[in-house]
Length: 114
Length: 115
View 1 (cartoon, rainbow over the protein chains, first blue to last red):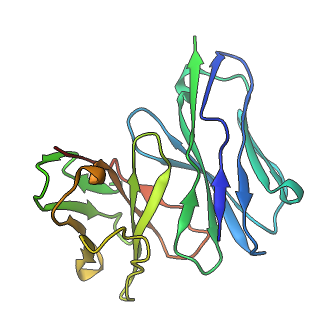
View 2: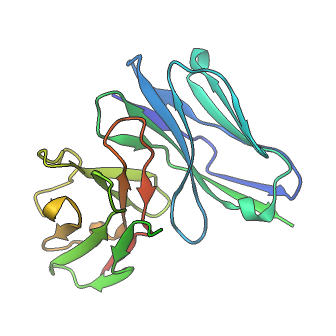
């Protein structure tokens, strides 16, 4: 079985603050893929990043960075110098090898205030 | 280029009626998924189509739910005898292939309200 937990239901920050969104996953499989999606107020989920279980290298893309740690089964997402346009619901997802079900967490609603 | 298109964007129906939700995936994408997003909840997997293979229906919550994909492209999700608990946003997604590392591209969803 696989499970994704996003313990933070809602986060509110002021513009330019850094913010980290937590994601903890559970699986007994050794091969799997982790994803982050953004769902802005318009409603359409947008793919942000993918990580496979064999690649623990952290990644930075502009103001976004991801920290994947297998030892703690976490795949956290940090936004540096947040902006109002970052306001959205962010979902972490897990997909096992040879499995059609991409399992999503409940999402974290991020509000960035000016 | 065109993304995943879903119609209608909103649907209000009376309890007990049947509804059909449509999804037009990105051209060339072989895999198609349906998810359900209830208010304040994450996404719940419903069904998966890959090419001409038999669909994975393991996520369908009851036999009132069914889906088909004609010609490997457009898909229709049908809910028969709708119940109030069916109210949710139904999201369709497609991906280039059905492999596990292919990211999903989502449509804007159909918001279904059962009164």
